[in-house]
Image 1 (tube, rainbow over the protein chains, first blue to last red):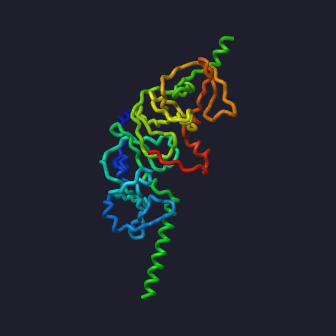
Image 2 (tube, rainbow over the protein chains, first blue to last red):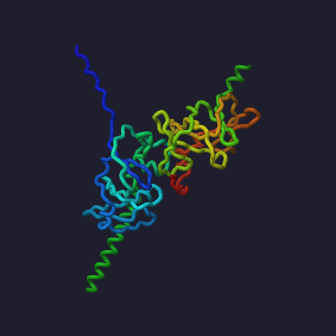
Image 3 (cartoon, chains in turn yellow, blue):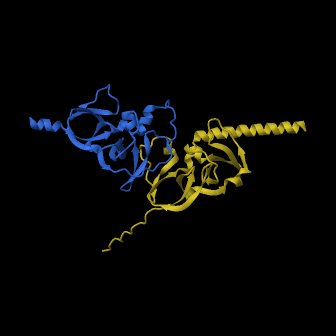
Length: 177
Length: 159
Protein backbone atom coordinates (compact mmCIF):
# COMPACT_ATOMS: atom_id res chain seq x y z
CA UNK A 1 0.00 0.00 0.00
CA UNK A 2 1.35 3.38 -0.93
CA UNK A 3 0.82 6.28 1.34
CA UNK A 4 -0.25 9.54 -0.11
CA UNK A 5 2.58 12.00 -0.40
CA UNK A 6 2.50 14.56 2.40
CA UNK A 7 0.86 17.77 1.34
CA UNK A 8 3.38 20.57 1.24
CA UNK A 9 2.26 23.80 2.75
CA UNK A 10 2.03 26.15 -0.18
CA UNK A 11 3.75 29.47 0.40
CA UNK A 12 1.48 32.45 0.81
CA UNK A 13 0.81 34.15 -2.50
CA UNK A 14 2.69 37.37 -2.63
CA UNK A 15 2.76 40.21 -5.10
CA UNK A 16 5.42 42.81 -5.72
CA UNK A 17 3.97 46.29 -5.46
CA UNK A 18 5.19 49.83 -5.84
CA UNK A 19 4.04 52.30 -3.21
CA UNK A 20 3.69 55.78 -4.66
CA UNK A 21 2.30 59.15 -3.66
CA UNK A 22 -0.15 61.45 -5.34
CA UNK A 23 -0.72 64.78 -3.54
CA UNK A 24 0.74 63.22 -0.42
CA UNK A 25 -1.70 60.29 -0.47
CA UNK A 26 -0.21 56.80 -0.53
CA UNK A 27 -1.30 54.25 -3.17
CA UNK A 28 0.01 50.91 -4.39
CA UNK A 29 0.22 49.39 -7.84
CA UNK A 30 1.38 45.96 -8.87
CA UNK A 31 4.92 46.30 -10.18
CA UNK A 32 3.96 43.92 -13.01
CA UNK A 33 1.52 46.57 -14.22
CA UNK A 34 4.19 49.23 -14.58
CA UNK A 35 5.98 49.05 -17.92
CA UNK A 36 8.15 52.13 -17.52
CA UNK A 37 8.91 54.81 -14.99
CA UNK A 38 9.92 58.13 -16.54
CA UNK A 39 10.65 61.58 -15.27
CA UNK A 40 7.82 63.95 -16.19
CA UNK A 41 10.41 66.44 -17.45
CA UNK A 42 11.83 63.97 -19.95
CA UNK A 43 8.36 63.51 -21.43
CA UNK A 44 7.48 67.19 -21.69
CA UNK A 45 9.28 67.62 -25.02
CA UNK A 46 7.57 64.64 -26.67
CA UNK A 47 4.06 65.07 -25.29
CA UNK A 48 1.46 67.06 -27.21
CA UNK A 49 -1.52 68.92 -25.83
CA UNK A 50 -4.99 67.43 -25.91
CA UNK A 51 -8.28 68.76 -24.67
CA UNK A 52 -11.39 66.61 -24.38
CA UNK A 53 -14.59 68.24 -23.12
CA UNK A 54 -15.28 67.49 -19.47
CA UNK A 55 -12.07 65.54 -19.01
CA UNK A 56 -9.64 67.81 -17.23
CA UNK A 57 -7.42 65.06 -15.86
CA UNK A 58 -5.89 64.43 -19.31
CA UNK A 59 -4.05 67.37 -20.82
CA UNK A 60 -1.25 65.65 -22.76
CA UNK A 61 -0.77 62.68 -25.01
CA UNK A 62 2.36 60.75 -25.92
CA UNK A 63 2.63 59.34 -29.45
CA UNK A 64 4.55 56.12 -29.82
CA UNK A 65 4.23 54.95 -33.40
CA UNK A 66 0.57 54.09 -33.91
CA UNK A 67 -0.07 54.07 -30.20
CA UNK A 68 -1.21 57.02 -28.11
CA UNK A 69 -0.67 57.14 -24.37
CA UNK A 70 -2.85 59.54 -22.45
CA UNK A 71 -1.16 61.22 -19.51
CA UNK A 72 -3.59 61.13 -16.57
CA UNK A 73 -2.98 63.56 -13.74
CA UNK A 74 -3.31 61.29 -10.70
CA UNK A 75 -4.31 64.13 -8.36
CA UNK A 76 -7.17 65.22 -10.60
CA UNK A 77 -8.29 61.66 -11.15
CA UNK A 78 -8.63 61.04 -7.41
CA UNK A 79 -10.02 64.50 -6.66
CA UNK A 80 -6.98 65.53 -4.60
CA UNK A 81 -5.22 68.86 -4.47
CA UNK A 82 -3.59 69.31 -7.82
CA UNK A 83 0.18 69.27 -7.73
CA UNK A 84 2.80 69.09 -10.46
CA UNK A 85 3.63 65.43 -10.91
CA UNK A 86 7.28 64.49 -11.06
CA UNK A 87 7.11 60.94 -12.40
CA UNK A 88 5.17 59.04 -15.01
CA UNK A 89 4.13 55.41 -14.74
CA UNK A 90 3.48 53.93 -18.16
CA UNK A 91 0.93 51.28 -17.31
CA UNK A 92 1.19 47.96 -19.11
CA UNK A 93 -1.72 46.82 -21.32
CA UNK A 94 -3.42 50.19 -21.02
CA UNK A 95 -3.28 53.52 -22.84
CA UNK A 96 -2.52 55.33 -19.59
CA UNK A 97 0.59 57.08 -18.38
CA UNK A 98 -0.05 58.11 -14.79
CA UNK A 99 1.42 61.33 -13.43
CA UNK A 100 2.43 60.92 -9.78
CA UNK A 101 4.46 62.79 -7.15
CA UNK A 102 7.02 60.07 -6.52
CA UNK A 103 7.77 56.53 -5.53
CA UNK A 104 7.81 55.69 -1.84
CA UNK A 105 9.26 52.18 -2.06
CA UNK A 106 8.85 48.74 -3.53
CA UNK A 107 7.53 46.05 -1.28
CA UNK A 108 5.52 42.84 -1.20
CA UNK A 109 1.90 42.40 -0.27
CA UNK A 110 0.69 39.09 1.03
CA UNK A 111 -3.02 39.81 1.10
CA UNK A 112 -5.31 41.89 -1.01
CA UNK A 113 -8.67 42.45 0.63
CA UNK A 114 -11.62 43.28 -1.61
CA UNK A 115 -12.88 46.82 -1.30
CA UNK A 116 -15.72 46.70 1.27
CA UNK A 117 -19.11 46.73 -0.45
CA UNK A 118 -20.01 49.98 1.33
CA UNK A 119 -17.75 51.70 -1.16
CA UNK A 120 -20.13 51.78 -4.06
CA UNK A 121 -19.18 54.57 -6.43
CA UNK A 122 -16.32 55.19 -8.87
CA UNK A 123 -13.74 53.89 -6.40
CA UNK A 124 -14.84 50.36 -7.31
CA UNK A 125 -13.28 50.97 -10.74
CA UNK A 126 -10.27 52.75 -9.28
CA UNK A 127 -9.13 50.07 -6.84
CA UNK A 128 -8.47 46.35 -7.00
CA UNK A 129 -8.75 46.31 -3.23
CA UNK A 130 -6.99 47.32 -0.03
CA UNK A 131 -3.91 45.93 1.61
CA UNK A 132 -2.59 46.33 5.14
CA UNK A 133 1.12 47.15 5.27
CA UNK A 134 2.97 48.07 8.46
CA UNK A 135 -0.28 48.87 10.27
CA UNK A 136 -1.38 51.13 7.42
CA UNK A 137 -4.11 50.50 4.90
CA UNK A 138 -3.18 51.26 1.31
CA UNK A 139 -5.51 51.19 -1.70
CA UNK A 140 -4.17 49.11 -4.58
CA UNK A 141 -5.04 50.80 -7.85
CA UNK A 142 -6.50 49.12 -10.88
CA UNK A 143 -4.32 50.05 -13.90
CA UNK A 144 -7.34 50.01 -16.19
CA UNK A 145 -9.38 52.14 -13.81
CA UNK A 146 -7.87 55.50 -14.75
CA UNK A 147 -9.67 55.83 -18.07
CA UNK A 148 -13.07 54.32 -18.72
CA UNK A 149 -14.04 53.17 -22.25
CA UNK A 150 -16.22 56.28 -22.53
CA UNK A 151 -13.32 58.54 -21.55
CA UNK A 152 -11.04 56.78 -24.03
CA UNK A 153 -13.62 57.33 -26.76
CA UNK A 154 -13.75 61.04 -25.89
CA UNK A 155 -9.98 61.27 -25.99
CA UNK A 156 -9.75 59.41 -29.30
CA UNK A 157 -12.30 61.80 -30.78
CA UNK A 158 -10.31 64.78 -29.49
CA UNK A 159 -7.13 63.28 -30.92
CA UNK A 160 -8.75 62.74 -34.31
CA UNK A 161 -10.01 66.31 -34.33
CA UNK A 162 -6.55 67.62 -33.44
CA UNK A 163 -5.00 65.54 -36.25
CA UNK A 164 -7.54 66.86 -38.78
CA UNK A 165 -6.87 70.44 -37.73
CA UNK A 166 -3.13 69.87 -37.98
CA UNK A 167 -3.37 68.34 -41.46
CA UNK A 168 -5.61 71.20 -42.66
CA UNK A 169 -3.08 73.69 -41.33
CA UNK A 170 -0.33 71.82 -43.15
CA UNK A 171 -2.34 71.78 -46.41
CA UNK A 172 -2.94 75.51 -46.04
CA UNK A 173 0.77 76.15 -45.56
CA UNK A 174 1.72 73.99 -48.58
CA UNK A 175 -0.81 75.66 -50.91
CA UNK A 176 0.34 79.10 -49.78
CA UNK A 177 3.92 78.13 -50.62
CA UNK B 1 -49.47 33.73 29.00
CA UNK B 2 -46.11 34.86 30.30
CA UNK B 3 -44.34 32.63 27.78
CA UNK B 4 -46.31 34.15 24.91
CA UNK B 5 -45.28 37.66 25.96
CA UNK B 6 -41.62 36.75 26.31
CA UNK B 7 -41.56 35.24 22.86
CA UNK B 8 -42.36 38.63 21.37
CA UNK B 9 -39.44 40.32 23.11
CA UNK B 10 -36.32 40.76 21.02
CA UNK B 11 -32.82 41.83 21.95
CA UNK B 12 -31.65 45.26 20.89
CA UNK B 13 -28.51 47.28 21.40
CA UNK B 14 -29.20 50.87 22.35
CA UNK B 15 -26.62 53.31 21.05
CA UNK B 16 -26.20 56.97 21.76
CA UNK B 17 -25.59 59.65 19.14
CA UNK B 18 -25.33 63.05 20.76
CA UNK B 19 -28.44 63.52 22.88
CA UNK B 20 -30.47 60.86 21.13
CA UNK B 21 -30.68 57.11 21.48
CA UNK B 22 -31.29 54.62 18.70
CA UNK B 23 -31.65 50.85 18.64
CA UNK B 24 -30.24 48.14 16.41
CA UNK B 25 -31.24 44.50 16.51
CA UNK B 26 -28.67 42.70 18.68
CA UNK B 27 -28.35 39.97 16.07
CA UNK B 28 -26.67 42.53 13.78
CA UNK B 29 -24.06 43.69 16.29
CA UNK B 30 -20.55 42.23 16.23
CA UNK B 31 -18.80 44.31 18.91
CA UNK B 32 -18.21 47.69 20.48
CA UNK B 33 -14.62 48.88 20.21
CA UNK B 34 -12.56 51.87 21.24
CA UNK B 35 -11.80 54.36 18.47
CA UNK B 36 -8.72 53.53 16.47
CA UNK B 37 -6.91 55.18 13.60
CA UNK B 38 -9.10 55.80 10.57
CA UNK B 39 -7.26 55.26 7.31
CA UNK B 40 -8.54 57.61 4.64
CA UNK B 41 -8.11 57.38 0.90
CA UNK B 42 -9.90 59.00 -2.04
CA UNK B 43 -13.37 57.73 -2.85
CA UNK B 44 -16.75 59.15 -3.83
CA UNK B 45 -19.16 57.38 -1.49
CA UNK B 46 -20.90 59.83 0.84
CA UNK B 47 -20.98 59.09 4.60
CA UNK B 48 -17.88 56.86 4.49
CA UNK B 49 -14.94 58.31 6.40
CA UNK B 50 -12.39 55.63 5.67
CA UNK B 51 -11.53 52.27 7.15
CA UNK B 52 -10.21 50.86 10.41
CA UNK B 53 -8.20 47.71 10.96
CA UNK B 54 -9.92 45.29 13.28
CA UNK B 55 -8.70 41.73 13.94
CA UNK B 56 -6.93 41.71 10.59
CA UNK B 57 -10.04 42.84 8.76
CA UNK B 58 -10.49 46.15 7.02
CA UNK B 59 -13.76 47.65 8.22
CA UNK B 60 -15.37 50.72 6.63
CA UNK B 61 -16.32 53.55 8.99
CA UNK B 62 -19.72 55.04 8.28
CA UNK B 63 -20.83 58.18 10.11
CA UNK B 64 -24.61 58.01 10.27
CA UNK B 65 -25.00 61.00 12.60
CA UNK B 66 -25.61 63.53 9.85
CA UNK B 67 -28.50 61.50 8.51
CA UNK B 68 -29.98 60.79 11.94
CA UNK B 69 -29.26 64.06 13.77
CA UNK B 70 -28.76 66.50 10.93
CA UNK B 71 -25.24 67.29 12.11
CA UNK B 72 -21.89 65.55 12.40
CA UNK B 73 -20.61 64.24 15.71
CA UNK B 74 -17.95 66.35 17.34
CA UNK B 75 -16.87 63.61 19.73
CA UNK B 76 -16.93 59.86 19.54
CA UNK B 77 -16.26 57.33 22.22
CA UNK B 78 -16.67 54.00 20.50
CA UNK B 79 -17.23 52.29 17.20
CA UNK B 80 -20.22 49.99 17.08
CA UNK B 81 -19.36 47.27 14.60
CA UNK B 82 -22.45 45.86 12.94
CA UNK B 83 -23.21 43.38 10.22
CA UNK B 84 -24.66 44.90 7.10
CA UNK B 85 -26.39 42.80 4.41
CA UNK B 86 -25.41 43.15 0.78
CA UNK B 87 -27.73 40.70 -0.91
CA UNK B 88 -26.50 37.29 0.18
CA UNK B 89 -23.25 38.72 1.59
CA UNK B 90 -22.71 40.23 5.00
CA UNK B 91 -19.94 42.65 5.92
CA UNK B 92 -18.89 44.58 8.96
CA UNK B 93 -19.52 48.32 9.15
CA UNK B 94 -18.21 50.51 11.99
CA UNK B 95 -20.44 53.33 13.18
CA UNK B 96 -19.06 56.01 15.53
CA UNK B 97 -21.20 56.46 18.68
CA UNK B 98 -20.89 58.99 21.48
CA UNK B 99 -21.68 56.87 24.52
CA UNK B 100 -21.80 53.42 25.97
CA UNK B 101 -24.24 50.96 24.48
CA UNK B 102 -26.82 48.96 26.35
CA UNK B 103 -28.37 45.58 25.64
CA UNK B 104 -32.11 45.49 26.25
CA UNK B 105 -35.06 43.26 25.53
CA UNK B 106 -38.09 44.96 24.10
CA UNK B 107 -41.01 44.50 21.81
CA UNK B 108 -40.68 46.23 18.46
CA UNK B 109 -43.52 47.88 16.64
CA UNK B 110 -43.04 47.58 12.90
CA UNK B 111 -42.42 50.71 10.88
CA UNK B 112 -45.23 52.16 8.82
CA UNK B 113 -45.13 53.45 5.28
CA UNK B 114 -44.71 57.06 6.34
CA UNK B 115 -41.53 56.27 8.31
CA UNK B 116 -38.15 57.00 6.78
CA UNK B 117 -36.49 54.05 4.98
CA UNK B 118 -33.83 53.80 7.69
CA UNK B 119 -36.49 53.08 10.34
CA UNK B 120 -37.05 49.36 10.84
CA UNK B 121 -39.47 49.92 13.71
CA UNK B 122 -40.01 51.54 17.07
CA UNK B 123 -39.63 50.44 20.66
CA UNK B 124 -40.45 51.90 24.00
CA UNK B 125 -37.77 51.96 26.72
CA UNK B 126 -37.44 53.98 29.93
CA UNK B 127 -40.24 56.26 28.85
CA UNK B 128 -38.60 57.02 25.49
CA UNK B 129 -39.81 55.99 22.07
CA UNK B 130 -36.72 54.85 20.20
CA UNK B 131 -36.14 54.31 16.49
CA UNK B 132 -34.89 50.85 15.53
CA UNK B 133 -32.46 51.35 12.68
CA UNK B 134 -32.44 49.52 9.39
CA UNK B 135 -28.71 49.48 8.67
CA UNK B 136 -29.20 48.33 5.10
CA UNK B 137 -31.00 51.59 4.34
CA UNK B 138 -28.85 53.76 6.58
CA UNK B 139 -25.40 52.82 5.33
CA UNK B 140 -24.25 53.00 1.71
CA UNK B 141 -24.35 50.02 -0.60
CA UNK B 142 -24.69 49.12 -4.26
CA UNK B 143 -28.47 48.79 -4.09
CA UNK B 144 -28.77 52.44 -3.08
CA UNK B 145 -26.72 53.49 -6.08
CA UNK B 146 -29.07 51.54 -8.34
CA UNK B 147 -32.09 53.06 -6.63
CA UNK B 148 -30.76 56.56 -6.90
CA UNK B 149 -30.48 56.00 -10.62
CA UNK B 150 -28.64 57.83 -13.30
CA UNK B 151 -30.23 61.18 -12.51
CA UNK B 152 -28.27 61.59 -9.31
CA UNK B 153 -25.53 64.20 -9.45
CA UNK B 154 -21.95 63.10 -9.06
CA UNK B 155 -20.84 63.60 -5.44
CA UNK B 156 -17.63 65.36 -4.55
CA UNK B 157 -14.57 63.26 -3.81
CA UNK B 158 -13.97 62.50 -0.15
CA UNK B 159 -10.34 63.22 0.75
